[in-house]
Structure formats: structure tokens, C-alpha cells
Length: 332
Image (cartoon, rainbow, N blue to C red; front, side, top):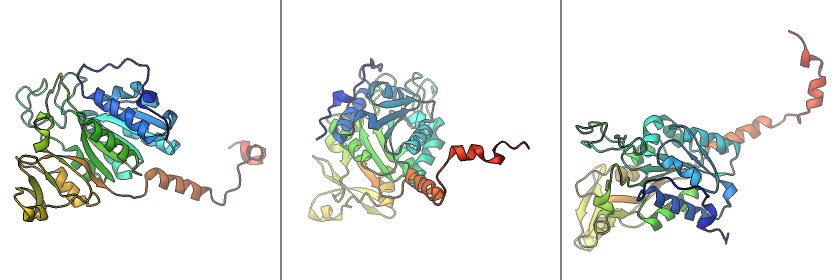
């Protein structure tokens, strides 16, 4: 037992988010998750970009760096290469990560740097007061789209899978236990862990996910993924997912035969993960948990191996001998 508690990861800074913002819950669960993980404060670093979510490093009693818009993955990559033993967390939003930072995010995912990337998705630009973001729904009326959004929204989990991420998960700010468990699991993955966290902005995009996350809706609208378990959900009416061509189909479960027809979750199946991430049907559930996870070489591990290989056979450095070499100061 480490003896660490959430309070050990709380800084002395006043938290400056709007009252009722989902970021408070995410902050609390990240602090609690770090205590559960058991590493001391100085073994963590929290790196962020720009946006409401990106204030989070100030509220953590760990190392941290508030970087520039969209560039947190690049800074975090440099940090991980310089100190591979650090547990590095990247805090970003749907705008910061998928708009100006989309290129950086894609490359950190494909490289498989051992980072934990937490993408707060509230489907809006909150810090700049309510413009539509890359994940805003079609037709959404905002300050920058008064007649409705005409851009097709991005799907963060599908983006991560398409970028060859080795770990993709999804959780919700309101579901404290599920979110904490997901964060702990993500930190245990060797490679880039991408966690999309659905987060409510009660000022500029209130109840964006209420159809799934309201207490009365959750039992009928959320499918929690567990490895090896059937893809079923619902208390009043049981539903399941079965194979239909190359995709998935929602169907009603009425008996044992229907239960047997349900697919079982395999987080190592990238095709299944893609089908779950892109499931689009009126009666489709909100899918939470680990969609995909595979083990493969990490970027910083391969870089360190290259360095050691390059150093092989070299003589130990001797600065005095180097300075005394006749050619050291030879004029050209």
C-alpha cells in the first residue's frame, strides 16, 4: 500500500472553472486515480494545451506544464524521451486536440509514446465562449454557427483508432467509479493511452449527452464494455449487438437463443473496436470502457535502444583529451 490519498495530489491553487462544470469531476477522479496507482507526486507530470480543460495542471500537486494551443502531445513526447520513468498525462479538449492539434495527436498515437491522453469532449469551445468545435453535432446553433453547423462532426475514438492507437477507451465525467477505473487502467498500458471523456459544459452546451447520462436514461442507454462479456444492455428491455455484414446490428433479446447470438467483447479486435466506435443507429447505446488495447513497442523504448546501440563500441568520453588534441582549435 502506498498510503497516498487524493489530497496528496491537490495543489493550493484556487480552481477557476464555472460552477457545475464537468471538469471538477474529472480533476477529482484523476487525483484519486493517481493515489490508487501509488506513484509519488514527483513521478507524474501533467501537460496541457489551451482551453478550459488545460487549466488542470495548476490544480495538481505534480510536475506540470501549460503549453500552447494543440502542442501538448509534442511537448509531452519530448518530456517522455528525456525522462522515460515519468508517468506523463496529456490534458486536452475536443477543440485543442482535434482542430489545431489534430496533426500532433495523430502522430503521437501512431508512434505509441507511453503517454496517457485525456480528451475532454464537451462538443463546444468553452474558453472562448461557445463557438462550435470539431465534435459539435450537425445543425448545432452556436455563436459561430447561428444558422447551424454544416461540418460533419469528428469521432474522437474513431480518429484514435484510425491513427493506429494502441489503447482507446471512453468514459463520462458523471460516472466517477467508471472514470477512475478507466484512468487507472490507462496508466497501466505501455504505450499511448487515449481516453475520450464526455464532459458537460453547463454554460455553453448544457446537457449535450443527457440523453445517455441522465440517471433515468443510463440503465437503458449505456453499454459498459467488459472483456469476454456479451455486448448487451438495458434493464426494462434487453438489447444486444450482433454481426451484420461488416458492421453491427442492434436487436432485442427475448430469450437464450438471442443471448447466444450476441457478440462478446474482445478488446484486442481492432475491427470490432472500429465497429463499436462508429456504431450509428437511432437505438444505439453509448459505449463506454476499453474499446481497444494491444501491446507493442513504445516509441521512447525504441529510441533508447537506438541510443544504446549507437553508443556501443565507443570509447568513454574524455573532455581533457579532446581539448588537447592538436586539431581541436585548428584554424580553417
